Image 1 (cartoon, protein in one colour):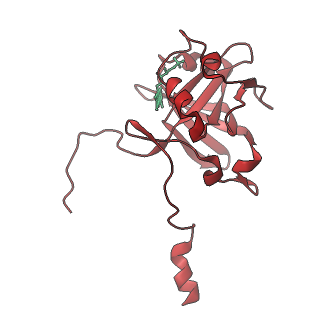
Image 2: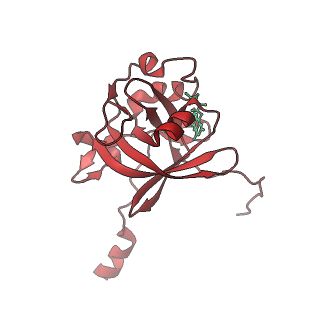
Image 3: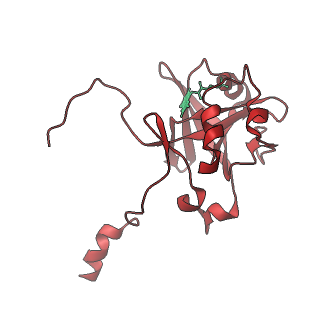
Length: 188
Ligand SMILES: Cc1cc2nc3c(=O)[nH]c(=O)nc-3n(C[C@H](O)[C@H](O)[C@H](O)COP(=O)(O)O)c2cc1C
């Protein structure tokens, strides 16, 4: 099949859409981000790319911490809303009916209504151009029982929202488990 050449751009899709909180229990913002990634497992590091114009940005710079809250699909409307309006103009917590919950390590509030919250302390900031990349060290993970399979987060239980070029989608069918391609080798 012939491939067409496109203008260079961030064509990677799908990506997770999450709610990132920053600030304190008395003054905090919450914003939808999709440019979020796992970048290292030891130490555990997560990156978020934030435009300096976002209200969220100054909370991260001043507080040196953020929380990645993973909403389930029942909160997709709130997830969209938090990416449409600024905390400068609206109290998004109140508008979405979200509850602030004290984190265990940082001063950043978690979103109670999200089944998974990951507390991060900023280790590095890279000024890349349109976005600043904050690399955060994971210092605590809070997960509801139903999203866990042993010590691991189970994506099927979590039911996260994927951002797919202008759309929100659920995860699809199970295609295989890690290592399944080698099972025939060991049987054969
Ligand atoms: C699905 C979705 C994904 C987004 N991803 C990002 C992102 O990765 N980085 C970013 O700076 N803005 C992103 N935005 C835009 C911000 O969420 C939006 O500008 C928000 O209103 C900023 O709010 P704030 O000013 O309270 O921080 C995204 C918006 C949506 C709807």
